[in-house]
Image (cartoon, rainbow, N blue to C red; front, top):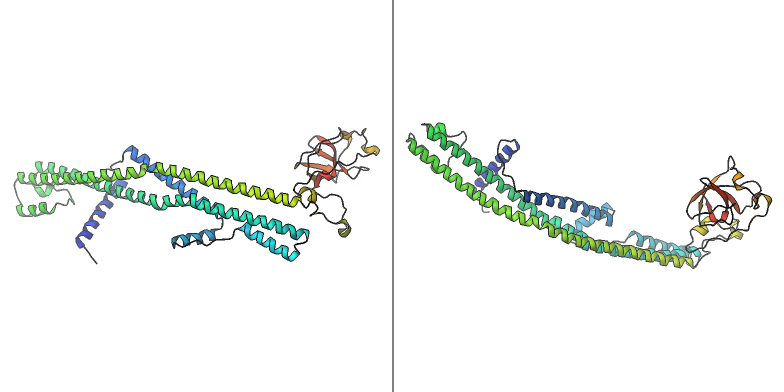
Length: 412
């Protein structure tokens, strides 16, 4: 092991002087070299880019993989540089369960055959989801991760180096200022020891010279401090050169943030295109599934002879069946209560017995005694004595009229 004691001591001394300078700056006891406005703006823009890129990256991970345990597992696979195993999506798993259930229920039954069809489309949806996740991870997440773990680490390293160069520069400025102050005092004071500021460390040559000459003449003392000033000025020039060079390197890296934005913009477009393709594919699968289900319009109907339930149309069978058409208009009532001479505005709701109903289909009123309906709206319905069972009185705000029962789903 190559252990250099002198280098270790030198590094420790540099670290100590930087720490002292930094502490004095924070306490307001030392001057600080400020960066130029352009560089400060670049640094602020870079910090903003890093912070928002990190937030977007983390939230995109949550969007693509909501399961925290799965994200942690994928993180360890990436750190170990191992391939992430393929994981079954929830839709694929649901589709498999549906198809397995169909085998138990009987694939020839209406329920079993429908389970097989829906399960197949669920598996297709799961396959589309997996493809979307893979595309998004490659085209969007990977570039963001490369910036955070690559480019930004390089920028941070150069910024830390720039800060160290700035501290070294300010240390040299303070040292030169003290040396000039001591030189001015030496010109006015006869005692060299009294002119030396407290804790001022002379160079090795100056210390040796001081111990040899002792009570030297005033001109010799002035010469000594002049040499100290010259040395401090030389160190300042070197520190200024290193600081300027590091500032230029850092500036060039920070200006590269603009190209990073351009790259991330391209990746964002690819992410949106992947999303659009995924949702378009899902929409097509669902449309195809609806067409498949519409081939069996009576799949959900209940056999009245075996169930004992009235064979009249139910809200479930008409509302949920894809592609089903509205029921036919019921016949006009013929009793006196519901004749065309009925003044519907005179009908009053009962004290009890009103219910909420959801409209299943649009309905156009045939005359002024009926109430036109819009699909999916909610209305209040009730019946009156002697009214035809195929009709109810419906109210919507200040409007009131007869509505056909087959167009409604009673909710409460």
